[in-house]
Amino acid sequence: MRVKRRQGRSYQRETSLYQNPASVQPFPIEKTTEERISIIATTPEKELCSVLQDLVKTCLIRKNIKYQHDLTFHGLQRLLGGRLPRINRVRTLQQIVFRHGDTIVSAQTGFGKSIIFYAIPIFIGKIAIQLIPSSKLGEEQKRSGLALLQRRPSARIRTC
Image (cartoon, rainbow, N blue to C red; front, side):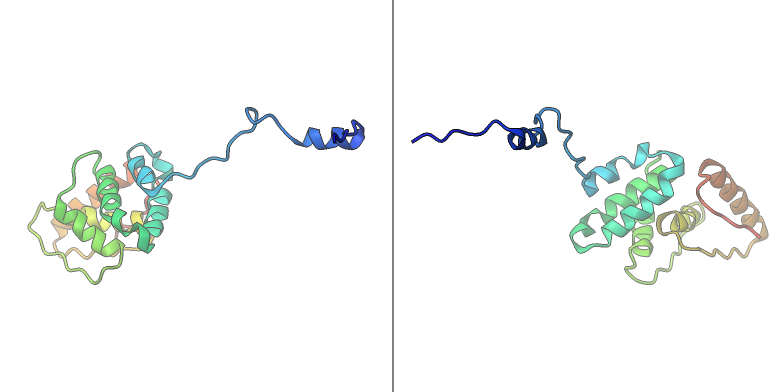
């Protein structure tokens, strides 16, 4: 037995609610943590601090712990202007940023301890205090810190 459908107003209202599937825009798919880390190199300067801080919060979640090293490596590489960071710099910064415990850094002159201290506020948005006993070394660090500040306007560095 066949049932006839009414072609009245209610039928027209129902059909107008349906759209052509080709014209419907799909929801934007959120990028994975790995994809977000891979685009750090192309992130605009003004957004770099907020992107890194957001990724740090994401990598604190248990399922994303495996990305902590990659985030630290690529973020530090970006701060170094594309140069590859030394592995001990990455490990030290990772230990500080991801709260793996207290960290004492004792390394020779020229190792790059200062970039670690400059990177802490950029990665986690907290204040880092660096005490430098030698006035000549202090002036050199002040100059390099101000140079970093000029390249990264979103970072905040205070010198005394």
